[in-house]
Length: 340
Image (tube, rainbow, N blue to C red; front, side, top):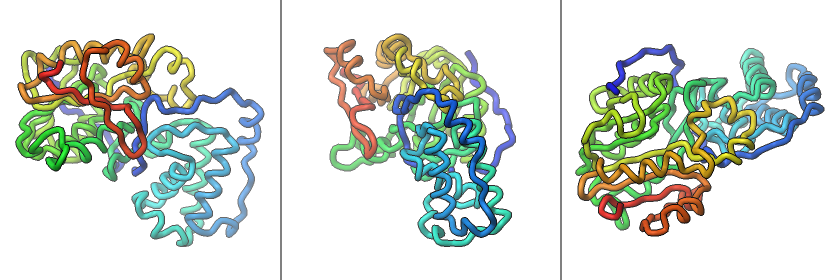
């Protein structure tokens, strides 16, 4: 299949929260009684809520009342509330502590109330409501065409590929080519462009809709000359091209996980989650084909969520290195080309 053409979508400038895992979601039971109470959210008189911190507390209370699931780049309801409050006020989430005690105008208060109400009543991921998500402090445009970015790979590119002691690649500046499989919004391709400043980056997705969003993010970061987007199934559109590094955050949720997804995750494209019965349908294909697309000293970095046991059972002879982050343990593996 061919390289995609650039498509311009209308965007807002593209919000940080800590990254999380696709599989790291809390299931919940239906709660019609809660839904009724949410519809009768308490009226707030002018002046009752004054500061940014007041509005975050109010939002957290409403989220708890509605039993919302938080799994889209924020790790807890407080972080999600701060994310929404800051976005309403055109602030970066990292600025919340600076302005926590600042007063909010009546017009700003109404914007915040409206956003909280939409989050509670629609159960849409917060990132979809504001068309924005953060990874490593960088904003990315997102909408319903892509999964909300929350991969741990972004953090790992910083912690394990810096060229220092223990780095999995000796010299990041010597990396000439990177492949991002299942790119979705293109956020990992953008982050890879920053970690490997001399690399050309190819990014592939089977969803034309996702590639339109990825194209928008490539444009936002002015990477048209370094990041190429391809429409196709894994390695199919790439011919015999080889790469110094392959990164992938593929669909990896197993059948039980798919059945247990909360409403917020069901709002995202199922294609980005569904990894088959044991969650490894796509991972198996990546491992089978990666060596033919890696340079001699290259390697594969792949996220599999909480599927380590299934991976270890399926590939007992592969010397996989399991990597941790601040928020995850053994949800991403690394394997060198020579070991595949």
